[in-house]
Length: 256
Image (cartoon, rainbow, N blue to C red; front, side, top):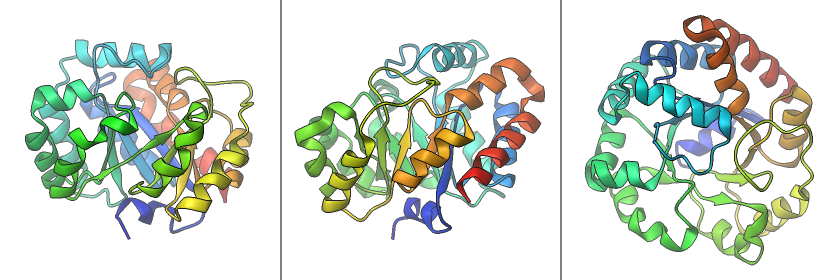
């Protein structure tokens, strides 16, 4: 079993996303620890990028603030090493192909292994182009996490069969951000995934309330929340970690 799959060992998983360096890396570290202490099963760390095409306005603004505060990929690797002194749950990076390319794919993935990153999510890399990253991921033992979108249709079975770690099911078309309701027929997507793989799948994009999280986790193995957490960091700045902790506890309780 991959380290990522461990996140789904204790019932429905709650996956928390944060943009590294918003408002600064110390606050990111404190917010990650608060999420972990309050029941998060897996942490997605966003490496900021100047053109985050999959993100809605909330996470776009967080990327900008993080870059303006001087956040670099090297500093984020240091952050992960520091977190790994006491954070034992799986952690993945979510970023864009350009970030990895410009850093050097081999160097990036070897640093992932050494720092303790378990997986990599690149929302702008289509399934057909993942070969550019897979060999290095496999060489350094980092799961390349695939995304399935409502538009994946005929490709869902194929993506599921080759999936590693866990499958990220995108709940709705468009960019990340909170949604009042999620209308996609996720049940049929999940059942098609289930016919082709037994690795866990979690649903993200648009989830912000305990009710939504429970609904999504009932369909799948877990819920992924980003914008609602990033919004707390935008609102409370350095005081955000305690708010993040309370929010995560509330969300995780809804999945129990």
